[in-house]
Length: 139
Image (cartoon, rainbow, N blue to C red; front, side, top):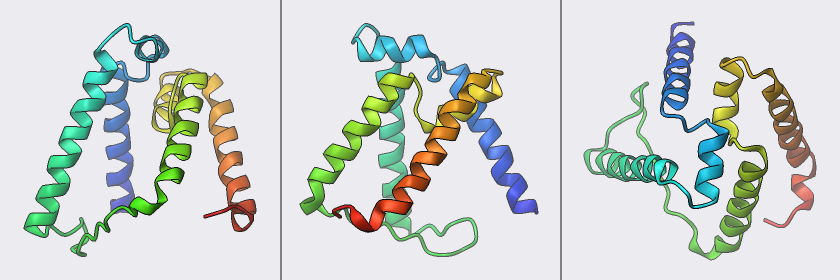
């Protein structure tokens, strides 16, 4: 129960940061896709830099996870580059059409935009559908 409370508080804190930094703003996202403002690129670039530094620290210092288990980060399979490009393009298309990616839709719901229940429900449906037809798709 206590570990679940940590995740809940972490999620609330992350949602707060997303809202305050305006990365959940539909207008900010539209500005990004129209190359009109640096705001979103600066935040995404900062997140990438923090991620790179964090992964290197975890790898070099062999830092365990929160339960003391070793963290294993396998290298990317570069022979599968098509799936990365196709998957990334589909993600970007959905992001541009909706104006939000999967994490921020929950933060937007928390701000009172109940219309976000529709993308959440359809994301769950899409995930379920992928699981149902996964064995028929090329991997």
